[in-house]
Length: 283
Image 1: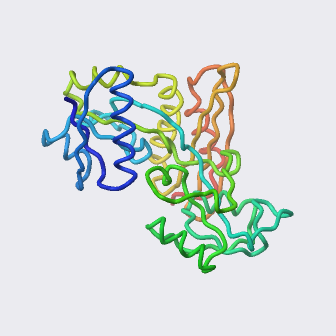
Image 2 (image 1 turned 45 degrees about the vertical axis):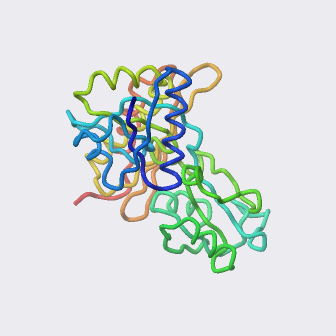
């Protein structure tokens, strides 16, 4: 019986159920779910769990020989960001379908810098940590629109059908590396569990997210205060297409897009571009 630790939230339970189903269906591995309130690595390092289910974007890229590693990537159904707005705030003539000087809630530094490049007139409100409260503000008319990650929706009772909304293409709003990718973590020295997890691992998905996370790691080494967006997709020819963006601390934005037949050097090429075109000085 594989013990999987999950966050004690609707999203955490959903992640655990998805992992449990994947392990049972694909590999015939029985699981039990353990709700864990502390940092996920504690459940593993204390021996209370064999694996942890989480979004890949919530786990930092490896820097060396950390005791907890990514054991498997299961799926990526919710990679993008969403813009949701009130019907009376709509203007189909404007980018993102929002009226001029609309008030937008919830954007982080990366989202704000990218959307503002197209719509510098928008007014920004500080994020609220609770998605239900954010939608309540939208419903009451306290704000015109809301920016959020698709990955925040699973497990919630929020229905987007009642709201005008748009899925933001990574060309417009590049998401954080690994966003919406369901991962299973394990202890580095737990070889037996890691071998089990490899039976449900998606190597093609890993080939894409490895580029995103490598770019994140190397960019933050050089520019710790930057906000990094990276998304890799594969087209019909199996070529890799990288969308990357860096929001600098001064509010400036640098974008980069490149396509290769393999994923080799994609992250490094983007990093070189950011080095050559950075919009602020570290000193």
